[in-house]
Length: 81
Image (cartoon, rainbow, N blue to C red; front, side, top):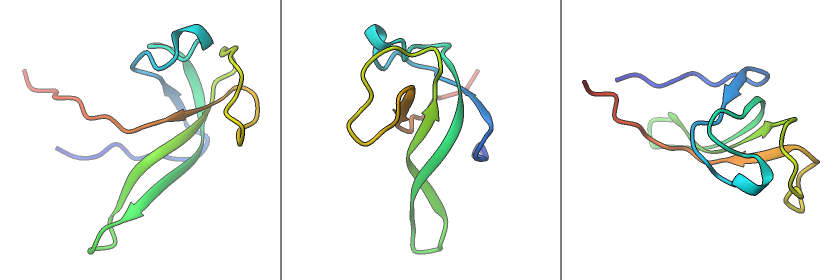
């Protein structure tokens, strides 16, 4: 199966509860701000994390992030039916 293209500025929806108290939960909507990735031996990019602007969140940001920014880690989902 293919990969989902990521574009800075695209709208995204959080699909998992990361921090319920801060509002980083399944269904939280935000905008992709940055992408971190590694290159494999074939120069293919593999995402390691993303920063998403999530205006509805309320918790204290991580020390290196502005308010309402959330670190999102990659996940895989089996879409077999």
